[in-house]
Image (tube, rainbow, N blue to C red; front, side, top):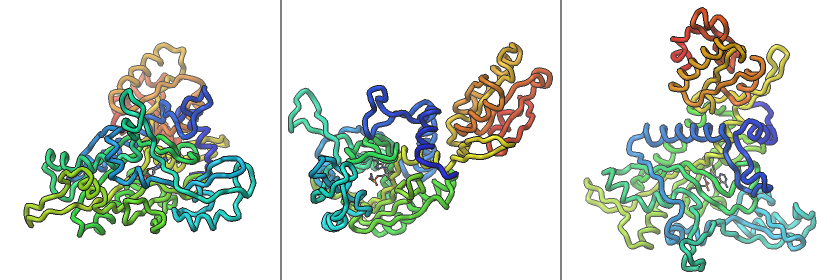
Length: 447
Ligand code: GAP
């Protein structure tokens, strides 16, 4: 990671088609973003890697894709309607609203402490010492279901993907004949009416989460908690190749923890704006299952065949945002280097997650035999790899720079020797070394 600023990342993301402002031509909408052609590939690769590691490579973890809008009783029972809040402070002078904890510079939900910390602060919008008492503000996004817009039809866009994993506990257990410990995982959108969305896609109002709820015997809470903390760390460092020096642990104290959590550890990543939360592991105990059991009157307990005991399982949750992970891998992979006196920006992304796997170029775009040969190689590689890009624009040096900037691990060039010898030149993004490879050995070389 070079000394990369958030502006560098935002500019690269826009220039190269990773992320655009949502409804940009109308001035955008705060907290909403669109993923462009390369952003959607990168995000899909991150999601596929997570799904592979969580659902496919683990024992007893099952996938789910639940509805975004659920019966509002779900969010009443989960405590979100009453307690999914952030501390807010209004300015009496200009009416601006700010996140009280951000302004106070401390991660806490303690309103008394926040009031003290904000005493001598000024409003960042008007600069006056006219901040009011901090108060809680609910972040649930509301809508109406059906043709009547009144209190009877109010529903919520889910604020986290977790909720329906609890209400589907028995459905998954029964259909999969699952025994403790087992997990339910899903990837999907969540919505939060954040007071101050900011830092590009770091804090948004529409976000995507990758979450897993691991149902366990209560006695195993410590062991399972440590297992999923380690899982998150290993995923970031080993599967995505993020440098350990850019990660650190942050344990929540009581004033910071969500209403459902008995313990919470975040992994913080060194984002350009500082070390901030990337991935959370939470001990949600039997909080959710018990609340849903009470509110619905349905049996959400587990019967242990061996001990003949009924119990409410505890839940260890692993939760990470796709957007935050995407910015983290971009920032971690971003390098500015000088090669033979020429500057280059290069994304040293792990090839598994690089949006474009390989670029194919004919040396000259106006030589029919080179173009035809290159097309053949392009078609061959497209069947084997993810996204393969055709690039015949500008000189070869420019093409390499363009691919470096989006993290393409290999560039394949077809020249006059290719016609004679059935070979291509493969250029490696990281070493910039070039190697002549037989076309029939190309797929094995690039794997
Ligand atoms: N189910 C637990 C849960 O939602 P959280 O700490 O509120 O816990 C989990 O969110 C993860 O979701 C965070 O670590 C972060 O990666 C991501 N996330 C949360 N709020 C976000 C927001 N407003 N914008 C982008 N990502 C967000």
